[in-house]
Image (tube, rainbow, N blue to C red):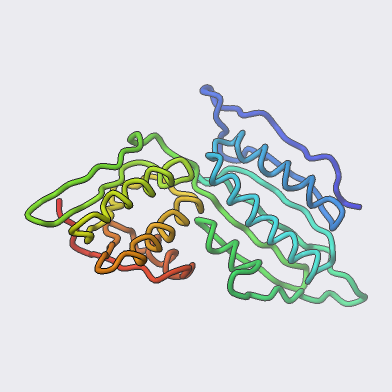
Length: 252
């Protein structure tokens, strides 16, 4: 078994936050110790300052990569976590390839599985393969101080807009659901402006698709998303849980 005791250091910043290069976790894993790895990942991610929802996203992404090591690699590996350039970075390393000859493991890339999940959830993702093994790296942006969450309605010349400021996360999801239902009274056509979004997690993304489902269930209703960065829009398109409509000209 490779599930040795994780090595960690306490946060070193004067304000109690971690500094770049903080080795938050260095832990081996195999099929028998994935549960322990998940618990360690969540604890260290939260300690590093990642919000609860994004910490859960990190745990899922790294778990999927570790599972690839077990199913398609040598069967055991290591996870290393550290902070770098405002990111919480996790390396999943399979450096002991089984067999008499070094062989690069074949990690499949399939929609809604393994590598696809890791790339969809992470803010940064790389995969390096070679004769010495495979290293998958995922990075999750650490939050910076931002505006408190607000969801406000704006009506201008017959154009209706819900404007979100702050984090699109699991705490915002219920408020989004309530606000969208309220917008489904006539005229039932509105824009959800995300230009003020400062952070997100997978629960927040799920809230967008859930809102779209509510809109689709009402005849003649429509919702368009506005104010998205190109990266975030590409992420939504890749997830493709439901078709989304975009508005590239939100009302100020």
